[in-house]
Image (cartoon, rainbow over all chains, first blue to last red; front, top):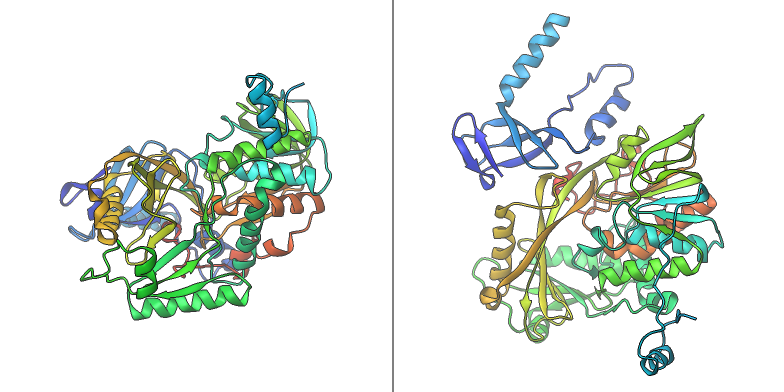
Length: 98
Length: 419
């Protein structure tokens, strides 16, 4: 498995550190059912074969946080994005909906 | 009549008859339309569960459904180590129960599983690590489990060929559990399958679960690749694929699937007596009866269902081996493989009811499922038969994460890839 870092190009796996599922988002701590939401956020995962969005940190490279979309049954990577851009897009959508 | 009981007399009798009288170890059962209890997953845990349900709880009309063949899953892909050297009160009694069952297993199921209590030695490399190991050893002894803290001299006597004077990670001693050891893994699957079959359990191979049928809040059966099978109670013992099967019932679990690699070298003369683990990296090694060195290390560290890993971990594991025992450096690697690990959020298993009536869950075995096999089967059978947990499996609740009762042996928090 090699990851095509948007800053550094294609690099070997040993340069990266894995940080788990990127599809879960931190819930609103002030919501009435926040406790339940946090249990789901911290512990529960979909974890089925197919495409998986996940966070990787380019520790031995540019120190960018990446959102990698990868088939977990095949290890084939379909996209690599900078996590900050993913977050920015998500914030824009949230603002538009607000 | 085929020979069904294995003993010195049956071997002699069959020798005289030219080995024509051995019957199949278990029937190739066809699925019936309904059962009282169906266990999904014909691995070690599922087969052990069915066996104890029939034998200890006197139940009948039990089936085990397996998507592949018996012995073809994780029960045949592990590194065969058994031990109970845990530290937390939630874990020690359970794993000790397992080790006690291993000790009597072969007589119980009349099958040679090659249980070999050759000792498990965890090495420490610093003063701090010695203190941690002493604490673990003490916790074990408080629970009545054997543990001995060895100094460097005693370790030198046991395994003189280690690199004791490694500049970065000198070997200072080790924590030894003499009752730990290895068990022939596929014989465990075959032995439990045969014993369960002799108690009337139907073992249905090549039968993949496709979905659950429910009425009200209760399961009534499973849809499989070989048609619908009705069941009053259903137990899932499909570690590695727990999230997939649970998703068919609409459940989301505190589990991620990860890949763990293991390796075997070419056969060499007897060299390593017991199981030795390197405490500075993550490397554990034992020698199989065929002579191959069986070893492994850490998870690859990312979610995977691929049953194969990547090269950085191969390199890391081999470096650990070379740091510990440089003399294995010229032994050639025969094969390496990857297995699916049901990594739970606290590194400990789950044996519990689910929110759906009649559906029971056994999973989250991380990379310690094999050693737990007999106790997992016994406790899961207890839960299914009596609808209450076995005393040693009470802490393994599904809702322990929500209630703050996680059992985090390694102390790394909800990061499955780090346990």
